[in-house]
Image (cartoon, rainbow, N blue to C red; front, side, top):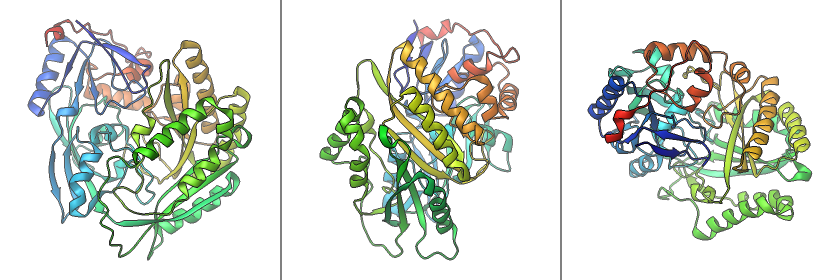
Length: 474
C-alpha cells in the first residue's frame, strides 16, 4: 500500500512505495540492495523543507536521513567537524558553541539538515566564504551499487563535485567533513537606505572591505532588503552590514529560535497583513527599516539567523513560496529594472525580496556561482489552485528570462518553473550532469521530480517508473 507524501511547498506530492529511516551505512546499503532487486526507485529526504519536489518520486521508496543524526567528530585544533547527513545546523551549532567554534557558512534557518544543504549547495549571508561547497573537505556517499565512496578534491573528485549540489541524484550522503571558524563577535555596523541604482557601488565597497588585508574590522556578513510596496517596487533598498568586532567578549549563547514570542507574533502579523492589506503593504518598507535599524552585537552562530516559525503560517488553500536568481554583481540594476516591469505588468505581489552576495566558487559541478554573483530571493504567497500556479509559472519564467539576459542563473532547489530550454541556458552543463549520473547510476535508482520533469522527458534518459510493490510490506 503506497503512501501519499508532500514537500515543504504543500503543492508537490508523490505516492511513495515505502518510507525508511536507516540508522547507519549498512542499513542504507540494505535499502539500496532491495531497491536494485525489485527495480524500485529511491528518493532522499533531509529536513523536509524543500519546495521543489526534490524529495519526491512516484513509486519510489523514500529514505529519510533523520536517524543519521550523530556528530561524529569535532577537531578543535584543526577546526573541522565530521557530521552525519541528518544533523541539523541548529544541533551542530549547539555542539560547537561551548568550544568557541562556528560553521564557516552560516544558513539563516537552523532546522535544515547538513546533508540537505550539501545536496543543494546552500549559501548564507556571510560574504567572507560564500557557498557551502567551499567549506566541504570530504564526504562519504553510498552509490547505487552499494559501494561506499570517500570523496574530496583529490580522491574521487568527480563524485565529490557531482554530490555537491547534486540534488540527491547521485547517492545517499552518509557524512560530511566541513571547515569551521571561530565563533567571533560581530557588531551591526551599518543600516542604510538607498536607491537600487546605487547598490552596485556600495556592494563593491562592502566586498572590498571583506577581503582587504590586513583588515582590523572587516565586513563578513551583508544583506539587502528591497522595497516591495507597489509604489516603490524594487526602486530602493535597505542594506545591513556586520563587522568583525576584534576582542569582543560577549558570552551570548547560541539561539535556536532568534525571536521572542512577541517579535514572532509581530512578524507573522506583518506577513499576514501585507498579504491581504494594501495599506500595510505600502508601509512595509518603513517598518522593515525600523526593525532592522536596531543596533546589536552578536556571535557568529547567531548573526544571520531568521525564524522558521515566522514563516510557518498554515493557511488553507495557500502557501508561501520562494524563488532565487543569481545575477552578475555588476548587472544587478539591469535585472531589477526589467523584473520590475514584469511584476507591475502582471500585478504580481511580492512579500519580500532579499539580496545576498555570493563569491565565485566552482567546486560543485552545477555551480550557480561561476563568477561573483548577487542572489535575489523573492518570497510570495501562492494560492494552491491550478490557475494561480500557472500564472506564477508564467511570471517566474519571465523573471528568469530577465536574469538570463544579464548572464545570470537561478537556484535549482526551488520550484520547477524553468522551461527545459531555460534550464539548459542557465546550466549549460546539465546534460553532462545527467550523463555522469547515468554512468554512476545506470538503472536510475536515484530519482526525484526534478529528474522526472527534466531528464526523463529526454529519450536518452527515459525509463519506465517501477511499481515498487514489494516495498508495501516494509
